[in-house]
Image 1 (cartoon, protein in one colour):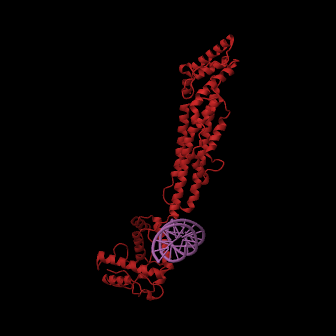
Image 2 (cartoon, chains in turn brown, cyan, purple; image 1 turned 30 degrees about the horizontal axis):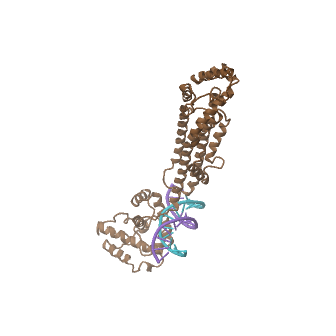
Image 3 (cartoon, rainbow, N blue to C red; image 1 turned 60 degrees about the vertical axis):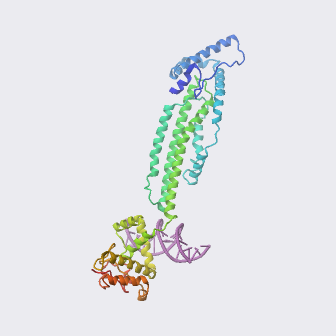
Length: 422
DNA sequence: TCTGATGATTGACG
DNA sequence: CGTCAATCATCAGA
């Protein structure tokens, strides 16, 4: 309240909210009689006295005082209010009657479209409307209590930011279909809780200020219009918070959606190198193409993709390999040749397999499907493979069946190449 | 524009 | 929980 007090005590005159000093009190209305003049002089003197006092003092005094009951008081206050109004309105008019903030409208529209802001709670105007409704006992006006206002604002901000963290708790990674709805619902809930708090705080504060103004209007010339104006000012201040809340909610929705869409709709093929690496691993572990968690992590790292993408890839690969093993054969041979070549190049004829575990009991098996003719094709890669393999130790024909039973074993009755033994 | 390839998702299953 | 099988949606080449 200190601001209010200050405003009203400067120069013993009346000031409006912006500190403008009102020019004069007696505007030379109808010429009053001498007695009347005297009366008005008295009451003005009383008002001036009160004006110079602090509010509490003034109000305490006022109760005992006859000022309130003075028959001239309503008329005088009315005149004072009118004068004040004239001065103030000319200053304020330009700022009033602003159209609703287009930005806020956009946010509202989006929130409604996303189903985050329900029709009941929705519109940005609703809080404003409520605030106005709460305030519209529509009487006296007041000074804004900055410290009180700031405290309230800080409180709301704090609650708001705490709640906001809930939006951001998502780890920033992929969002699955099944999560999408749940996360959206979560956002909706947080938003509506927040909005409720915001509305409540806004209304509480507005009501509080309005009550104070009404109280003051007993001793100060405060017109209903001024109170309305004050409500508008408060509303504008709170609108900033409202905007922030809505903006953040919109952002949260957009981020959620883009993550979701990125995951599903904006599919990108893996890079050529990544596919190479994955295929190399797959075909060199054909008898048991189930990479361990560590292997998946390693592949993910090398390929620049996530572990779950590696899992997806292997899942797809296994099923598609099985479905069309004929076709996969060529690919298998190609990667076999590659791997073997790499082994030969890196280790030499005497060495084991380089890179992935081509040797050993687990992998390095290439199988044909029905009819060995597939394998006997003149495919260059196969020839290359034969060449390489013969260089690095030739064929052997033993224990491939020692590997864990695999879904691929049924195809292993054809010629099978084993990795070279050193 | 059509079509096969491919990455992702989903529901069932052990 | 990992995998399979089916399916979706997009990519990419013809």
